Image 1 (cartoon, one colour):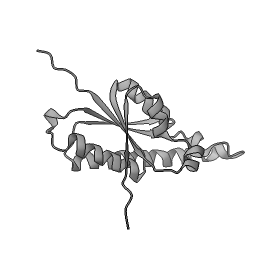
Image 2: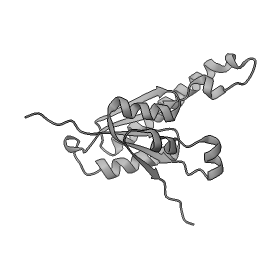
Image 3: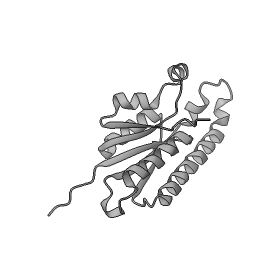
Length: 162
């Protein structure tokens, strides 16, 4: 008797509290009560590390001199993000997880990860930007909702009521 492959869930993370909230929410709701033998999904956590040149932009003469420093900082941030994600998974007793860091724009990296892993669902945190900020910066979750070839779940962190 052949065992069926589990569907794949990709969770996109960055260094924001919103993405870590989405990861914790996902682990609690999809992996919380299941033992590792019966988890409903194969979990892949993906962090998109910006390229140094995209982080610096077109800063003019001398920009090339700072690229190694920017790249070093981006690598440290990526390592910290992945370590934090790993700690959250361990705390929630989710051990069967793949963690990936891919350089590039988060929109493209996440949609490519969906294709690469044949994901059934992509989970993203919502940064809660307003209309103007979203129009200027663009929304990774909006882009993925329209371009990823799977179900996209956007987890919003509840607003704290005073």
